[in-house]
Image 1: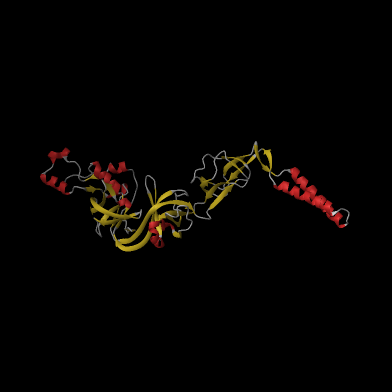
Image 2: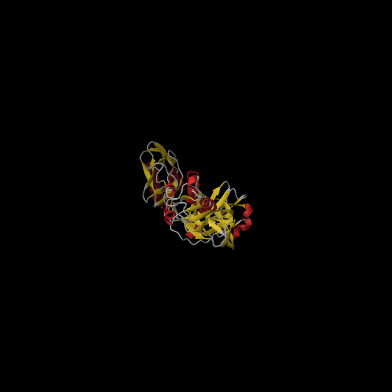
Length: 396
């Protein structure tokens, strides 16, 4: 089992997000190309430049503009991790089913019914057309036949009591009532016209669409599921080899696949483990389901696939950094250490386990060092740009 520290950092710099090109226009690497000024430097200046190779210079203003934040490295909690895949599902009680009030051919009222699409209470979602469709209905003639038979039976009750009819005659009238009731209970084919609409009973989001345009549906058929999305659940399937660790699961972090790989610590949103090993499906022999409920942090909808990092046992005293503090080059990982105000040195580190939000550092960092925890990519771009920072020269 791999372990990971959730980490503790004290942020000391502000964050203002601007475009990378704007930042690079105002900052750069200290180890820039000297060929252009070859004849203008003394030997002493060249020696000093070589000593500072790998150092990126950011002024306080440039760091603020590029969203660069630094923090002091301190050991924190070590956390066991089970990495697996998962899916976001709606919490029970936060869902409502949209049902058909008429039989007919269904169509979408507003285009595609995409999971995650917002809907309002009372908003029409489906149209149901029964025009020219053979459907089922109890018709008026059958109801009239039953009413007539029941009236004769009521009169026959008195006649039988007065011995004005025989038992056989009474039984025949009673059989007519039974036949009329059976005929009314059996749907009769008729051709109808018109139709109806189906609306969302609540405001929320489409969790699931259960029909396709052109489908024929009966009265009461479920058409879609709408969720309020206030609470969500992470449903993760854990391989059987981790069965001994399931009792120690206490929470999870998730990574939402996207260009920016959104990382969410579910503990920040009131998460709790709902069940372990319940609701298993046909893959139960290979996987064990784990369900964790949490408040929606925003931007998540039922049906989203995620990377799940289930958190297990704890151990203190391990150095970690946020995942965004790491930059990668040819399979090696680096952080930027603050050498002095406005000077940052690229430092190689060895990375252990990850919980999706933080990464364990097994070597390369010491307690008390100050590193860039946000905006490290901006420093990497500046270092690779070969541009001298604005206002910086070689007068040391």
